[in-house]
Length: 108
Image 1 (cartoon, one colour):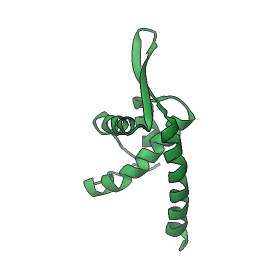
Image 2 (tube, one colour; image 1 turned 135 degrees about the horizontal axis):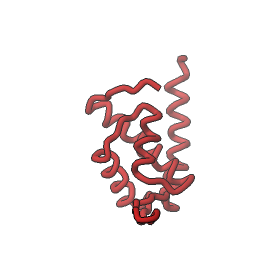
Image 3 (spheres, rainbow, N blue to C red; image 1 turned 90 degrees about the horizontal axis):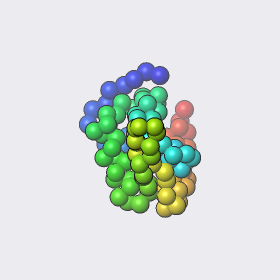
C-alpha cells in the first residue's frame, strides 16, 4: 500500500478512524502498541509512539479500553483489550460508519 504523509488537518480528520480501528482490533484480541503501529502502517497511517500512546491512553480514560502489563520472558509490555463499554460504542459506531460510507461511495 502506498504510504501517504498527512498534514495536521488530515491527521485530525483521520483520528476518529484510527480510534475505531484500535477499538475494532482490541475487541477481537489483546493487542499492544508496536502491533498497532505496524497494523495501522499496513493501512497507510504512519503513527509514532508519541502519537499512538496518547490515543490509547485517551481511549482507556474514557473506559473503552483496559490495559495491563504482561510479561514475556524477561520483557514486559502493556496489552490492551476493549471493555464492555468499548464494545458497545464500537457496535454503535459501525452503524454510523456503514451509513456514512454508503453516502460517501454512492456516486462511484
